[in-house]
Image (tube, rainbow, N blue to C red):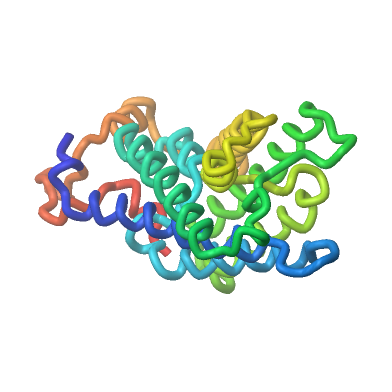
Length: 263
């Protein structure tokens, strides 16, 4: 439980809260209908993608900029963070998402709010089809995040923030037609809470969580394996305190998993 006494731990939790708040506020805000006619898919896709890219650049060095419980779950499956940190990240993300949606709700005219960009299935799309779509959308996002965040790469090409943002944009350009492109349980949870509409809501948890887990396993155990022993993985999951080269505890309180997520 040393993490609870670490200032960097609480800075990371705060970063996830505020980053998810901003992500939901700007993403959902750009998805509202202010004028008659259909909503432009490109507008929504770019809004979410640019929001995530901005936040990766802003807080990636503090928390890893997960901004998504599914992404946090992926890092947990890859034994890149402790169970305690993962739980706190997810709690902060959900609270931040609800806070962001609540602020948006309060500043938006009643006639424009609608369902607050609630994720819904396209007519004709079954829950099974929707779940598969959400799995694939989140799978490609997690693969992109793992690849761009990977400190083992010899020379990263381009901007990490833009790469992640474009991956999310791609998911929206395709997924908006099927499921509204959830890809993020916190993003789907926030408007569902405020509108009290949980119809098929489980799809936006099950799909992204499975997709994220598969993405983590695919990258970390098949495409570019991390050579960690079982004991090392268990140590990280338990939140063992990192040590310096002499085996003594470091004084910075920097968790070992954030070193693999630094941008």
